[in-house]
Each structure stands twice: as structure tokens, then as C-alpha cells.
Length: 86
Image 1 (cartoon, rainbow, N blue to C red):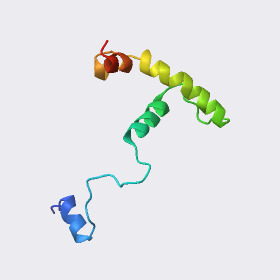
Image 2 (cartoon, rainbow, N blue to C red):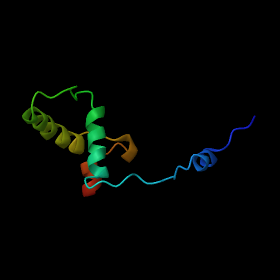
Image 3 (cartoon, helix red, strand yellow):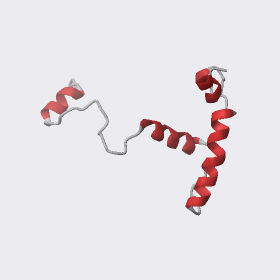
């Protein structure tokens, strides 16, 4: 028995394929990337006790990440040095 490709299965099930993400009014890839960056940080807590605690965490995290954290994907430079060209 040979299985059909997914594209044929979708046609058989009358499912329309879509290669783009669904558009929503607040869809922002930059913000989504920041959320993923935050969630992957070992210091990111499971929960914040308050909005103020979350703000304090982010106010400390992003300057560190942008100015001191060295990224392997950009030749172990910081985002700030790559952006500023230094």
C-alpha cells in the first residue's frame, strides 16, 4: 500500500491549503520574537506576581540582552553593536 501525499489528502478532505499565517490586527513578528526570547531565558519565572514585577524584569532583561548578550548567529556580537555598526 502506498500513501498519498498530504496535498492529495487535503484535496480529498476539501481542505484549502494556506502558506501564510492568519492575519490578526495585533500580529507583530518582532513582538513575537521578543516573547520567545523572554520565555527561553533561564531567569524567566513561571509566573509574575504583578504587572509591575513583569515590567521590572523586562526593564532589566532587554538592555542586558541587547547590549551584553553575545549571539552565535551574528558572530558573537551583541545586537547593539551590529545595529550601531561598532
